[in-house]
Image 1 (cartoon, rainbow, N blue to C red):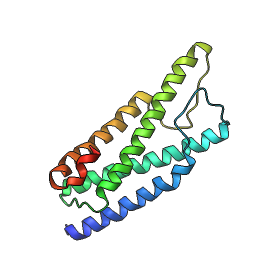
Image 2: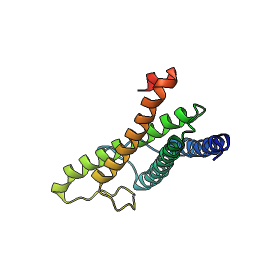
Image 3: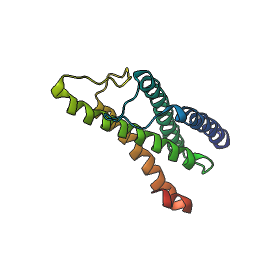
Image 4: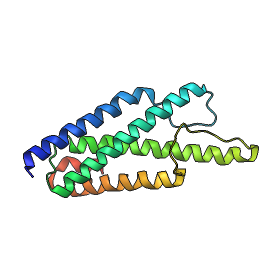
Length: 155
């Protein structure tokens, strides 16, 4: 594998996924809040935007893992992409935790909260998967800290 070509290809993929996150950001409202009075349609669009952004963030983590495995990690855009992906993953975790808390509070009233997701995973399982991705990125930051000084403040 040509390391220059692999690095350039990974950078193009990373920038593509970063653009996806940035494009969907305005359509993602704050994490779910049971006391907020919002229309169901807005929540549906927000959930779709959050899901699309989360998919892009998880794709960034996969590209970074592949780059790390191949040993062609370059600082150009990699840490920036990792930073964006981690933020998006944590936003989704907070959203799931807020929904889980609201659902527990509403169970006594037999109200089921829809989250707009078609995933088959329980919120706890999805949180575990997202946090595993966050830990992968944190490991990459730990490794990058040895080479690049600007990775330290992110940790």
